[in-house]
Amino acid sequence: MYRAFTKSFGLCVVLTVPLMSGCGESHDMGLVTGTITIDGKPGDEIQVRFSPTGDTTGPNSFSETDAQGKFTLTMFDKAGIPTPGAVVGTHKVVLYDLRLGASVTGKGIPIRLKPEYSLPGQTPLTKEVAAGEQTIDIVVP
Image 1 (cartoon, rainbow, N blue to C red):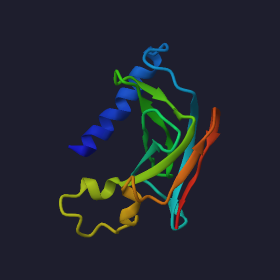
Image 2 (tube, rainbow, N blue to C red):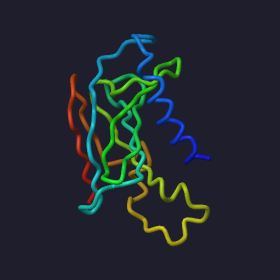
Image 3 (cartoon, rainbow, N blue to C red):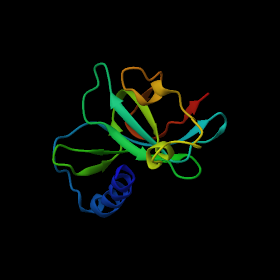
Image 4 (cartoon, one colour):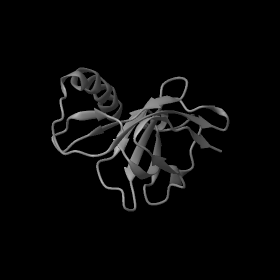
């Protein structure tokens, strides 16, 4: 079910983005793309979430990495309308391994991320989003 959500999420973004014209509440936004690498290899099938922290307020932004570990962030406003980008400011970065989520038992799937990377209160990853287009790469040792 979770995997179906992420696929429909991507379809929703593709179909809805062209229809948007400033609906919902307004935030200063940055358009964020990047690459996740894990132990020097592309982090494919990873869900990435940027969660505003500290003085930064606004909705979370999400993406799913492709086979090369590349992602492009999208956020949803209060009405559920997707908008490309992330709120300007400081974010905690949470990573979920979708390979584990797609497995019924998890057996035979190598553990690529330490558990703290999937916990918003414990993730060691913090990134700053600025206004405009930018690349934010995430390196997981």
